[in-house]
Length: 356
Image (cartoon, one colour):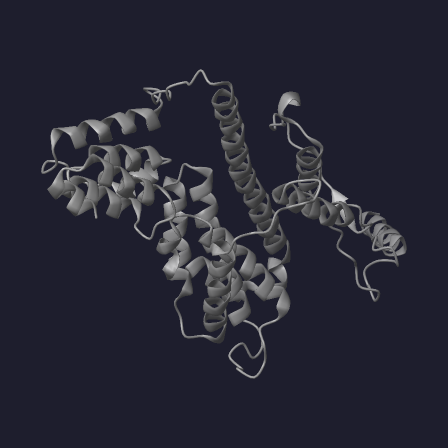
């Protein structure tokens, strides 16, 4: 249709095509960009560039070489690049004087801001979940043994992703990479266990639940196509993760029902982590360390109860450790694990006799 609009030079047909592409469409922004250039549609080019949300999406949409494109396309791309960098502000829409239109324009601004806040809230919730899982894994690592720890250090994909993590700047991309690293670690830990490739034994639900959470974080990201590396492998756990990934993709694509809870879902996630941390740090067998000086705190104006509790609880968890319980049959000490005072006294008497 856009080709026909270009051939007939029909503005009305072009407008209908652009409106259709602006709604739900199977064409990616990259494909729409190529269509706009091929069929000389400046309005579609403006719409495509306006839909680009960040520098990474710009890089995925716009070809590296622009020499073959017309000057109009180059100017539109350059303008959007400046806007994303914060050098220029995007042009404001024309304001209507009609009261209902003015009201709806302002309502749209609020609703759009709600979407932005929820998106950033999801990123924050994912950051908290990934930190919690990292701490949980690190605390339990001694149980897995030195061989497992060495296997994780030697995993080439983990090394590759760790290098990518050093170059990541956006929190969403950091979450995307960290979730992949956690998937690889969970898979390797499971593979090192007893009978990991016995296909008759199901993967434990606790492992599947964690892998599903990571898969959702990965596939909610617009760069999810770059995560194929963590789905590779012919082990039983690799096959299970591929199935989990398919389920996560369906979850991310489905239309979610309206949330009728008091808080946003990402706040509920933080509250759930807080509950677990609070119970854990108050166990009697944990010994607390003092917090270092100069650590960062959430400012008063940015603070709210869920995040305040999390910051406090997770630091208490990290700066504490499980008390080592001495074995009952301690030949070198008494029942409470302290050195045997009688033995020390006897050694002291022998030393005095030798000196005399």
